[in-house]
Image (cartoon, rainbow, N blue to C red; front, side, top):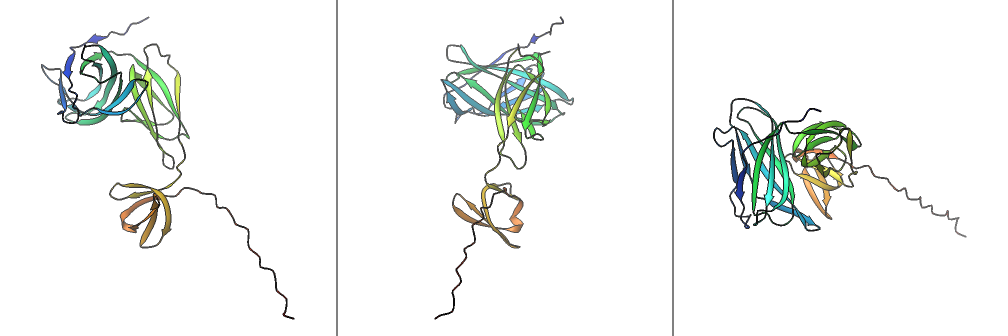
Length: 264
C-alpha cells in the first residue's frame, strides 16, 4: 500500500491572554523566511459549552503574498493550557487562493478549558477522505468551513480534523452541523442534513436586512410586516424580495340567519 508522505514544517507558538476582548489580532507569516501567506486571527469568541468542552470561533483572514495561485494549504492548529498540555485542535484549510488575493474564513474549534497558547503547523501530502453531503430537500448551497463547496448532493474531500458544514436553500431555514473527520474514516460515507421549513414570511430589504415575520398587507406604495408583534411599514422601493410561507386557511362555516316570516 502506498503511504502518504507527511512533511511536518516548523511549528509556530502564540500566547493568548485571558482578556480576549482587548487582544490585538494574531498575525502569522508562513513560512517566516520567505512568506507566501499571511494569516490574521481575529479574537476568539466563545459560542457555547457542553460537558466541560467549549466551542470557539474566530474570523481568519488569509492573504496570498505571491504572484502565483495557491491551490491548497492546510494548517493544523493545536490549543494548549498554561502547562503546555493540548486541550483542543482544529484544521484551517485554504483552497484556490489567487495571486495577491485575500479570503476570510470562519474557523471553529473545541477546547477543554480556556486556551493559553496555540501552535500552528503545516503539512503537505495530507490525507483526505471523500464524503457525500446530502440535504433534504436537495439543491442546497453548501459551505464547508465558510467556503462555497457546491450544491447538494455533492462529494467533498475532507482533511482529518474538525469542520463546520452549512447548507442554505431558498424557502427553508438554513442548517449547520459540526463534522469531525478521523484518520480511520472509511471513504464512501455520507452526511445528511435536513432543512426545516420556514414558519414566517421573509422580507429582504435592499440594504441587506432580512426580516422574519408576517406580511400583513401589500399595496403599490408600501408593505406592512408584523415582527415580534409590532407592525412595521416599508416603502416598496426599500424591498428587494418577499418570500411568503404557504399557510393553510381554515374556512369558517358560513353563518346562516334563519328566515323570518311576515309579521303576524
